[in-house]
Image (tube, rainbow, N blue to C red; front, side, top):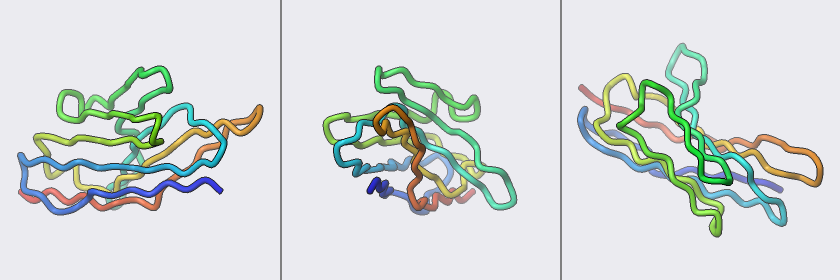
Length: 119
């Protein structure tokens, strides 16, 4: 069974930093793209950053230059370093992994971790 477990959320003042981590247990299956999403109260879930199995990364414009996504394939982990945090970054952050299962791919989600940025 595929499981994703996030850690590292918390409360921080504006301008501060946090680092989120996500560990994926996928058994014998490999992971293609890993990503971080977030969902603020009353808003839709939005993409924050992605990283492919080839190391390509993509960021939402709102976090470009402040957040960095990184991945360790040997450990099936992905991290999100968040610097210069703003109150509008407050949200529940979710890790996502696209898992290759034979000839099919399936997306899995973590349980989410709360990030709160105070002004």
